[in-house]
Image 1 (tube, one colour):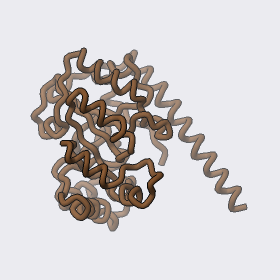
Image 2 (cartoon, one colour):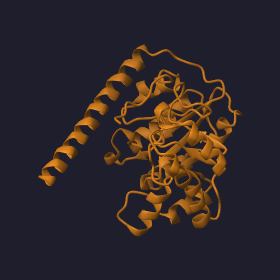
Image 3 (cartoon, helix red, strand yellow):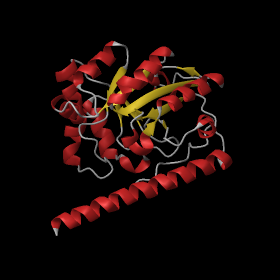
Image 4 (cartoon, rainbow, N blue to C red):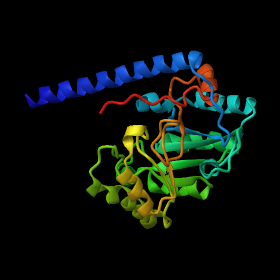
Length: 268
């Protein structure tokens, strides 16, 4: 009976993912055609997750598509700058920045190489417990600490993505310090520095609270990144989510602001 319940729960979870992905595809197709464009006077920050890791689902882009998106942005006259430059309000309208969440291995094996070719600065946000577990599990799809350290030595800005990637919108206040200050302490222990930037897991309007914001500031974070534009939580830095569906037509609309009032559809 227990195994049957687990199987049904797993099947339901897969169905929800498929429904969410289908809705996302339809919404992004529609907005590419009918969405209003919006100016970004201080630049735009893109939020990626993985490159050529199909198991990441809607969060993944192929290496070929990632390269073509960079080429398209350059052809449109964008200049790639550090994410923190835009986050601190020093960007210009044609400035564009790239960030990666989660710390997938493909970021080091694929994305870092391509970004180095184009001399593009970027930021990587790490879930510290996932990276700890990767050190003990070589087959993990998450970067181990030695690779995070190497990327930082190569000039990549490293930030926190929490300790365990919870939904802060539903997280009890008693766990906030562990997820925020605790993650920052792990960075100090492993790499000898404490990050000042933090990317909210999931990052939509429902995934952050006033208590979480206060705990993040108390922990020492200076920049809090969301994963949405106009619908983001208060006092967070907007980022534009890039999905596996974003071919040239959709990516062009994305750069023009067609998705700035769009949020990823997620199940609670």
